[in-house]
Image (cartoon, rainbow, N blue to C red; front, side, top):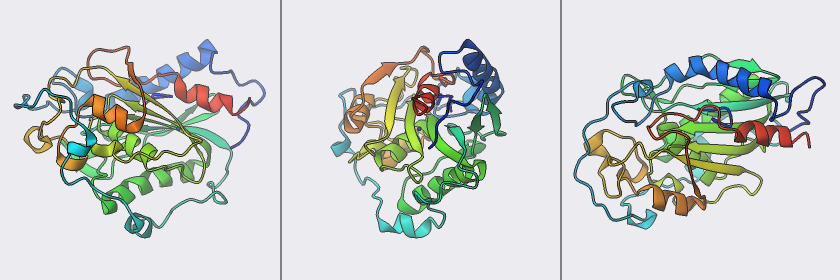
Amino acid sequence: MAVTGAAEVSLHTPGRPTASSPRVHRTLAATFVVALIALAGCGSASDAQDGATLPAPVGAESAPGTIGEVSDPATYDDDATAIRTDEPTADDAGPDSSAPCIVSLHGKGGDGGSNSSADGVALLFPRGNDEGWGGRQWNYLDAENYAAATSVVATSIDDAGCSAVAINGFSNGGAFAAKLYCEGETFGGRVVGVVIDDPVPDAATADCAPAASVEAQLYWTGGLLPTATAGTDCGDIDWTCEGGTIVGIDAFSTAAGLAITPSPFTEHRPYSDAPEPMMWLDALGG
């Protein structure tokens, strides 16, 4: 999740602060304090917000992995489109087509939250499409589950009448956000940017082909190490991973074509007030 951290019409309405306004950042930060409690992901045992304690690290290869080394990667084809019945189009941008939105994708064990708004921006917290660690998770590991997870986000966006969307995904939600980015998902041309915050570094970025119009930012705390080292079997640590194996953050970022930006945190926790979402949304008002 996030307000960045957290991807259309003019967003500069009379009286609305810009992205640099302290009031915007204070308001959004306050709004997300409550939401952070509900966030969860594949985090460290010290991160109470993840809602679960990770198993101890298992033996893993220390050598960096590559996406090509992951066995049995999931593929996405026309089946996903057939399963997803609410696919938005450029001519169907939601009920009102008027509100900029930031969509926060929680980690494994989280449970979304109540939608809210701040300074004309709708803040959306959809629930994952599957159960995980006593809460919810984003299951995108095959065509059917990917379509189901994408439909949850599409419904949230459509119900809010979003005209422009920035996505911020954390941990398991970060890997799902990366999958959306690499699949070129724009929800009918509305996504302007995606924040991939401390993701589970799996094969979600394999064959990455993002939409040219969508920005992306990858944050990494290092807090998932040493568990998230290349070669780790995700089944052994009860993580949800495409391909079933951790590929490592270097291979993950290289496949996505994104530089790794250090998070302001060194433990596995969401960067909820990352600046990019508001910057992307405000830039539309030019």
